[in-house]
Length: 262
Image (cartoon, rainbow, N blue to C red):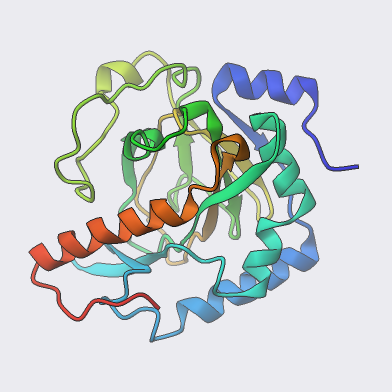
């Protein structure tokens, strides 16, 4: 029988817009993920700043560092195994209420000194897709421990019942673009969740969340998987085609040339 969330867990998710699930990933798969994360991060061909898969992040020291690969499912059999893991798929289908498709997947390294992200709702950049917000569910999977010191993700409970950012995004990749207004965040104190490796957090595409910089000397790796309700079709390929088009335009405007996807 496929893994399913309990009615109590679903009630918690529906009330807060997120749910912490300890020890979702077993030790064997976790060890494999750890090794593959190390391997791909050390691959100089992937870290090429012209690679559309690699996304840079500002650092506290004033520089930039490649801090994310998006997508990752084609980089390793271990990542593919994670996506199709019974517990992962079961969690996603439990929330959506039926079969799901993989929509988006990324690995965030959160390197030492890397900045965090301002409070936002993921749906802000997905709202033009032919699917409602409740048809998109994300799962954060911790590869490393996540703490306040290394920039663990903070969630704002109960603010997922509506979209709070209606303004048009003029700068899709700007750090101040698409943020949740501060007066909205004031309604619910954020909850920072400490995570152990293998823990997961499921959260709605409308749940505001943010993170602080990594103030430690170690990476804080986390994999983010987003699934879509299969009733709306497979949205992955059209989404990434559009996403890469915007990336090319943004990087071309910054003077970057010879872009590729590897």
